[in-house]
View 1 (cartoon, one colour):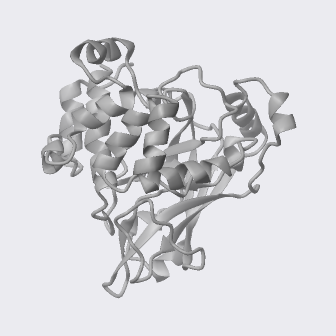
View 2: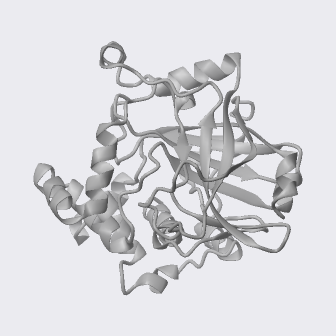
View 3: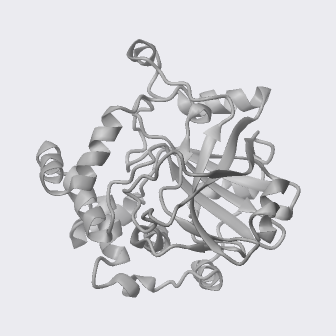
Length: 330
């Protein structure tokens, strides 16, 4: 079974509020095509065409699996989000590493989890990372980062010297040990969203996922004994025994918090509300939705009633760039 025709995919994107040509909204900054070129390292016509043939993409090394989401009924005491009134909602999940290398080593520190939670009438997608800090506050910084890191040590030094947000990100990554499993990683939605409260207020917040089995990291000695490809087998073997589980929270901002800049961390003392629990058990891995999930996109602004995107430029550039990348891979 193949993917729907591209025209249907584009139409679906339009219907869900994602303007296909929304790169024009930030054309004065960086267009979708420029952002994808920066991520792919395709800065000219020759490399761009080669990239299309190779179907270049970020997070190239990854796999899909499935499970369910169980909402917390008590959330309805605070938020007016009908989507979370359902008892249990199917999930399609993709776990991945960063970068374009299909053969990247699992011994790196980056862990990424993307989710599609498809309810009766609405859907909610997540694109998350195990770092709470993002490396760019705007599209110019994002473009510079993706371009310079591909230049090796010299490019990285340029970022350290010229982009404080990139330096802060590098400094944090140095302190982040590799986790023993995708299931033992925390995941963060670094962008902010606007949540509708029952009293009519709009409350900004960010998503975070806490592993029910706790964070488990690897020592250097443990890491050296593992093969380069251990994460997929570990998770798929684990969920044959019991589901991998995360508690999903919304961390609420205070009026003084910066909500449109993903490089700014909020204090850990900020209130968190339990949204529900993600359970990954592989129960629908034989269904086409799961088997084909590698070939689609996860749309972080595909949101149910009661949740809206913030004005964060990084968030609002994601989906047009994802669609641009999708088209190039066809």
